[in-house]
Each structure stands twice: as C-alpha cells, then as structure tokens.
Amino acid sequence: MFAAQCTPAAETPTAEAPVAAAPTAVAPAAAAPTAEVAAPAVTEPELPLFYGAYATPIEEPWDGVIHAALQQAAADGKIRYEFTDDIGYAGDMERVLREIAENQKPAAILGDAFGNEEAVRRVAVEYPEIAFAFGSGLGPAEPNMAVFDNWIHEPGYLSGMIAGGVTQSGVIGVVGGYPVPEVNRIVNAFIDGAKSVNPEAKVIVTFINSWFDPAAAKEAALAQVDAGADVLFAERFGVIDAAVEKGLFAFGNMSDQNALGPETVITGPVWNMAPTVDYLIAQVNAGTFTGMDLKDFSMVGKGGAYLADFHGMDAKIPAELLAKVKETEQQIKDGLFRVDIKEEPPVSD
Image 1 (cartoon, rainbow, N blue to C red):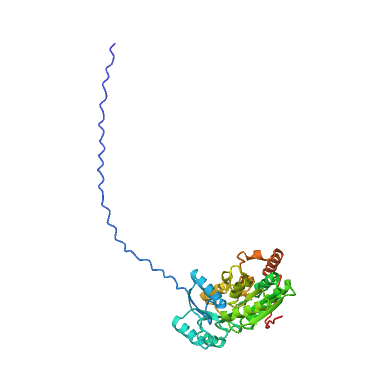
Image 2: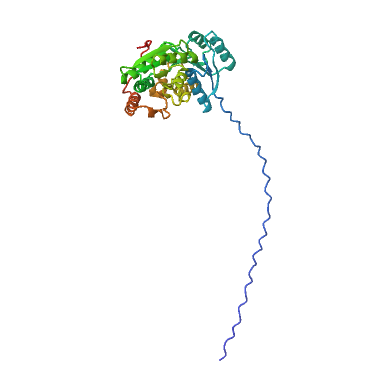
C-alpha cells in the first residue's frame, strides 16, 4: 500500500494593516495676556485723637493719673494722644479749649474742671461733636459733657487702718489741698480707717488751699511733725519729702508713690483711670458717647481704685493688722463692707 502524500493547502494572503501616521504636534494657541488688576489699597482707619487739657502740671498726681492712663492707651495703639498742662485757674482754660477744638479737632478732650467749671461747660456746648470728659464736682450734661472723679475713699480707709496700727506716738498728720467734697471723702475715710483699729489716735488735718504747692505741703507736714505726728498722709504732693527728711512713715495718694521714698511710703490709695479711659474709647468709636457720670469706673468694684503695692514695706506692718487689712479689702471687693462716703470737711482732734 502506498501512503497518500498530502500537499499543504495554499495560504490565504492576509491584508497588511496600514501603518499609522505619526501624529503631528499642533502648536498650542498663544494665551491671551491677562491684565494684572492691582488690589485696592487698604487704608487703616485713623485712630481717634484724645486730647488732655490740664489745669495743673502733670507732675501733680490728680492730673498725672489721667495723663498716665491716656499715655498707656496710646502706647497700646488704641488712640492718638496729645496734651497741654499747667493751664491754671486765671481764665485761660476757655481760650485753650477753643484752640484745641478748632486746631486739633480731637474726638475727645479730657481734663479737670475743678476751678474752671463754667469755662469747660461753655466750650463743650459750642462743640457738641467732641466728647468732653472732665473731673468735676458737678453733674453731667447732654449731649457731650461727661464727668468723673477719684472715688478712692475705699483704699483710703485701708491706708488709714495701717496708719492707725503703725503710729507710735498716736498722732497722725494729714495734709490736703482744699476742703472740698472730693478731698474730704478721702481724708474722712482715712481717719475712719485709722480709728477703726486705734480709737485713741489723734489726727491733725491741714489744708494748704492749693491743688499743687509742694513747698507749702511740706511745710504743713513738718509743722504736724513738730506737733507730734509720726505718720503722714500725703493727700497733696510735697508731704512725702517731709516724711523722708524726718525718717517717718507716709502714705501716698492717687498713684503709687513709693519711688518718692522707698523706705518711707508704705502704700496709699491709687486711682486707676484705665477703666474710665477704655470705656470712653469704646463709646467714641461706636458713636454712642453721651453725657454721663462715670463714677463707677473709678471705684474698687471696676478696678478704678486699689491699694498701692507695698514694695516690701508690708514687712513693717504687724502681721495681725496686715491680715485684717487684707480681709477688709476682700470684703470691699465682694460688696460685704461699705466705706461710708463723708464729704463734710474733716476736723483735727
């Protein structure tokens, strides 16, 4: 048998796939130039100008406290601040205030109206767009005359407690400016504090009939020392010089005055105007300022009054007395102890 010979089947031709053409790069269309738009400049609102108008030199503690609070507000970036001091009581206040209002155009003017009440109020009426806030023994007036005062009788009482406890002679001297209500209430509170711990203490009170006469205040204090006083309350500037000269304890007033006699000044009532100034700034910025009595901002409850730092002088105070003073201070803060406000002229024992 012969094997059958197989012939391979003819291959069916396959069509070749066409070669894909290489893609041609298309140049991107040039982007249209975009115009740069400058961002609008942001203009910071100008800080309000607060102006101080002071009858006495700012070295005098009363005006000095206002000045210090406004300086601090300016340093904190809250306001711009300028001032004029030593305007006096001879009739220049009205002219100076008008010049400030016309030339400086401040948002607010602060100062002391004592001795210049009518002048300040006349100018305030003429410039209702300016906030006037002045230390005053009178009331506020709409729309733009606010008043304040140094309600520091509470720490004055605490200072008196210490004075009554540290006197060795039993005689305490007090030198004040004028026997007016805002001075009387501090002096009377000091006396009440002294007698609360030392009922037998004798207090000599002298008024120099000036807001700022350091030489007269020192002379009055030295006369009290000659009369037996061994502790002095410097309601006016100049008394501490006498205490330093005689090596006696003293109490400052209005501000922390320890630097005037580091081994002499134990403490003293401090007036802190910062709460008042901060409130005024907020009212001016909000456009809601109105004539009002700002009394509460100068009291212990709102931080407007306190007892000055002892600067180590608390070591000179008997421990039991110091504890009593601190207890009374806390009671005042908590509203559990009220220091009487007595505005009648104090008298010597």
